[in-house]
Length: 73
Image (tube, rainbow, N blue to C red):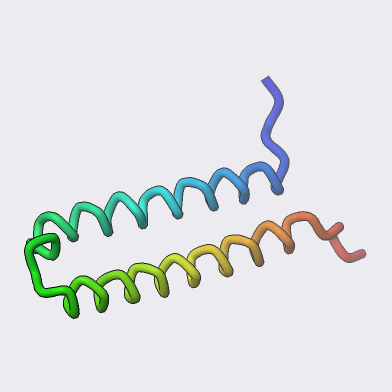
């Protein structure tokens, strides 16, 4: 079996990190009772979750971009 290319490895890390973030957020949503909270609290939670997702996605895409660049001599 051949080793995964750096780009594939970074892409896999990207997918796993987004999935872990969402699993954690959904778990917190129900564990903290956000589902039964006032709408304002639900909205704050959603904005925080969305912001964390944006950060994880941007960092992941930057890592994939760097992995695709050829090594400098």
